[in-house]
Length: 497
Image 1 (cartoon, rainbow, N blue to C red):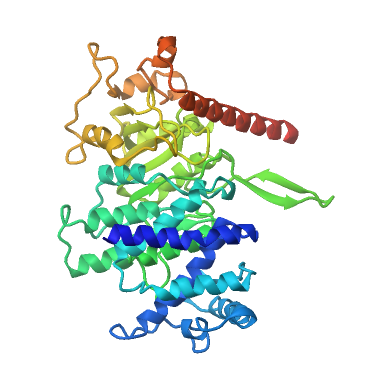
Image 2: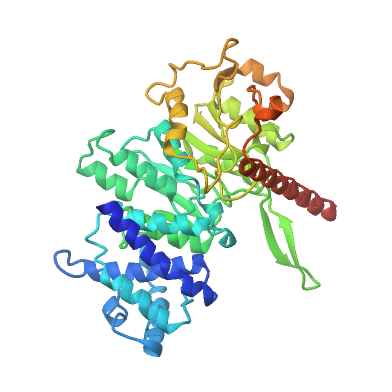
């Protein structure tokens, strides 16, 4: 019944977006306004029996000061409330900081307030509340125009990565580019699952308030992440939020964690936009000169690998989504791959299929590595590669990836004891997807490339066995998009030279 209820609420809440879109309000702006209103409503519910909790919202700016108003009075009160709460401390102030009313149609604002007022949000379990908000985030990600999809990692992939890492209670987890908080929610779900661990009170308290460390660089996404965590019972409105707003790559944050689970933003270059002497806007490559980095680079993903290495404890484990260029790029890319093989046990690479991300043309992988204490020898002895790309085709709507599709990879990874693995590839079974390579084999490869595949592409081998027109069209679009981005980067580079 909970699923039916949450689905009905998602449809109802999201249905309000259609009239707003006609009014020029984007999906992302709508989600942001919902965040403010939901927070006010839940704070009001918590202030009443049986909770009697004070959310720190001053008199005159509470839900009860808002929900009976209409028209210009409602607009004025809502505007005043957003401004006042944005000056508060803790999670409350962080959610409302810089908040403005983007719903200029007073009649629609009234309908949204009334719709939220009808539900008892606190009484819902965190599973149902979380499912509703995640459903809204999913719908926002599906809206191609909003560009929100780049902050949304497919949930089946997140779940599989968490199952492989198998985080333990009383240990810390970081995501330096946490988007809407998907990795944290999956980790919380795994640790609190009674089939995995029976948590005592201390462990539950640690999971809620001390487990997670995150960063988000986009303001609106940061706020939706805060709300998403709060609805899932992570963090508290009375304390500082578990995530911070800003560029994670600027400095070493000082903390060290047991696990990093992350999907750094797509796009190779880090850049800043500035106004030149002629008053024109220009982009300039941003290079982070950090003492803890192995090498300087303007490649965002290469910088994130170095940042992750810094924030991991010497016994830490990481699972990171990274594009193909990280596996084969020369220069800084080769230096960082060698350092990774030297200082960590880079034991597993999952080659991901196309058609699973909202950004077209992305060819990505998951790198799993364990940090090790300093040693003169290479810490990586062998790399196991699971090719989940060749002859695998997904589309976001007609044929999306599901949990079931990654079950074989998780089984091959063998989270219970990854040192007891078996290849599914052999001379007799050349299409086996799981294969290992020794460190010696990898070091002999040009530029120490980890871009390794061995399964024959059926589309190339048998022209009579072509994929469906939808799959072909999707592949063509992705390849064109990827080529266009590479061409644009090349043009920018030539202009600078």
